[in-house]
Length: 95
Image 1: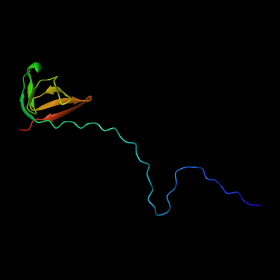
Image 2: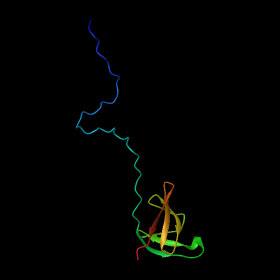
Image 3: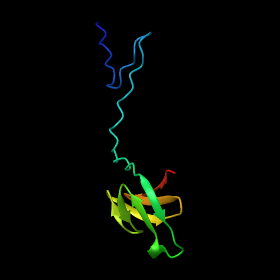
């Protein structure tokens, strides 16, 4: 009587001794556009938010303005807070 061969269940192949284990490729991650590299050359700051201005990349902007797809959220005496895709980031003025 012949013994029937044992069938193995399909699954990940085990590496042979001495071979590095292969890792499953990770799924591609969604890339978000990096934030712009703004240059702030001047800030005019007042207590009243509607009076605040900043010169960013040569353009005069106020709080609420959009520049390169980013909203100018708040202007401070030495930095500006932006929001892009719902995420805030800040840029300090280079002095």
